[in-house]
Each structure stands twice: as structure tokens, then as C-alpha cells.
Image (spheres, rainbow, N blue to C red):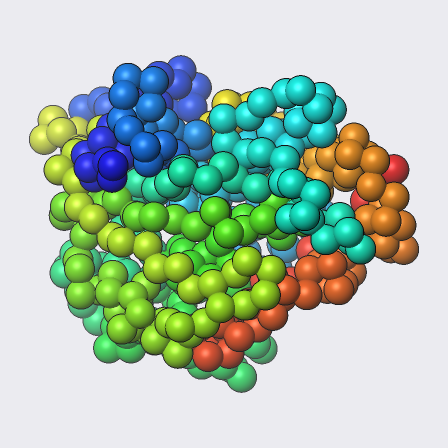
Length: 412
């Protein structure tokens, strides 16, 4: 039984409401109202929707900023490159899976509501890769309080402008000179169906973080799993069933162009790859619910609309408040400021799972290098890399890797 769009939205909105004030924008005053985008991942059991099987939010995130390209090299795996709400929610979802994997690996009798150990015949004897899978009979849905930045929101962005003059195309970064299709959010409104960078202000430092529209479009092929999680979990059951947006943010023809098999994803619409990967398009549906901290919720009594600088992280295993991609109240150089969902800590958790599983073959291959970049480029990730290469060549052309943040983690 498929849940309604409003039920998915309610699961995320209700979970957000349960968080304490430290994870939220400050309360509205006469001077200003702070807003922030919200996204969440919801799991639904398809057999029924009894009381104990209602849609359940298993991760959420808020936020709207990303790291300038000239600061990526300094992140060292400990600072998020991108903390837009959709990205935070996806990272929190992957952290949840990693922690569930760790608990199953540590206790053979442990049961998880989201994942299971795969049977011996399902796992490659030569590598031991992907010893876990998301349970059959579960659906994954996403709710977002705003249309994803980039192609899916271009019509909304154009309509909202007082001055609809597009920004001039800037080519300050060498990579964008070679690929002029990689535009900022307000550059060349007439160009639709293309890969864009995060739509920051025209005078802000440049980023190479792709828009959330582009990242979600790619997830239709790579699944919701991040690279480190795909090391442990088979992707077959890790695809989105639907994306739920407020009705005012749901422009169907824009979403079809951005995500649909008849739009820019048409070149890969019938693709299936090895390793359980395939093009699995999600439905885009509208909800009548609005988020209390959306920009559209500003009360008339507040004179100014301001964006919040807090990014909230939630999953059953973690709750955090982030500022500029690291824990609130921690200095940039403080190692204790690293979020649980940053790359360094996610990879460390992955290694902890491998140690608990006792997989010498995998550990031997990982131990050949301490550089995460080399792990991701190794044959262990060949299937996933092939998917990304095909999609970015055939459907999402102009995709530039946001590299420069190579860091080391000693296995063991």
C-alpha cells in the first residue's frame, strides 16, 4: 500500500517538530523571520500501514550552504562540502545504515528494522563485498520543503525575481572555462535541462558543488548509498520511490525534464549495470503541507526575511547542529568539530564494520593504501564508478568532480 504525499510530509515535519530549539532557526520577531530548507528520508513498509507500520522518518537535514572551491582542500574529510538540506538528509541516512551495519556485525543475533545480512549465495565469495541489504518490502521516500536547487526549480526561481535579468556567465574557475554548461543557479535562465552549480549569490566565492537537482538525478542511477555505504550494502533496494514537495514547489514539467525518463535522463532510461545498479526514476508528488520554517511561512508582522545559518542533522543514531559544515561551537581546526556525517567519520565507521565482520580479504585490499581517494578509484568500487561515468557522460554532461579533499585514514 502506497502512502499519500501528505503522510510522507507529516512524518518528516513531525520529526523536525520534536527536535529541540538548538537545531532550529531563532523564533520570529518583529524585525525578522529566519527560514531554512528541510529534507527527510522516510521508510514505509509496503505490506500495510497499521499503527506500527506508518511512514517513519529515519533521517532529516536542514541547511542551504556549501564550501567554496578554494576551501575544499582544507576540509581534510572533516568538514562537509555541501550542507544543503537534501544532502544532509542523504548523509544522515547513510550514517544510519552504517551504524545499523556495525550493530549487526557486532552481534549475529541482532535484528535491524532497515537492513539484513545477505545470504551466503548473495555475496561474492572472492571479495565479501556488500554483506548487507535493505530489507525487501520497504519503500524509501524523500520530502523536501523547497524544490531542489538547480534545474527542477528554474521556473520557480525565474518567477520570484524582481529583476529577471540572469547573472552573466562567470568563468573564473579553470574547469568552467572548459565546460561552460556548468552554470550557477541564476546564470542563463534560458538554458534548461543542464548541470548547474549551487546557486549562490553572484558576489559569493565559487563552488563546484553540483545542484541538488543534479545530485538527486544521479541518485536515480547510483541509489541513495554513498561510496562508503555502497562498500557494505547492496544498492538494489536503496532507491527512492518518490520525492514529495509542497504544492507551490512542485512544477511537474520541470521535474519531468530534470528527473524523468523523457527528459534529460532519457539517454540512460533503459540502463542496467552490474552490481545491482539501474535507472530507477522516482515519482514527484505534491503535498498540501507547508514547513513552518519555510520562506513562505514568514508572518506579516516580521519585517525582514533572513536565512538561518544552522544546519540540523537527525537520524536514530545522531542529532547535531552544524555551522559552516562542522559542529556548532567548534573551531575550524578542532578535530572534535567533525560531524558524524563528514567523510572522515563515515569512512572510519565503515572500517569499524569491516573489523567487526572479520573480512581479511577486504582489509587486505583496503590496507594497500591509506588514501580514501585511492580506495574509491580501486576495483572495489568499479561497478559504482562505471554507473557515474556513464550517467555523467550521457545524461548529466558537464559534471565536474569537486575534488581536492583527499585525506588519509589508517585501516585497522
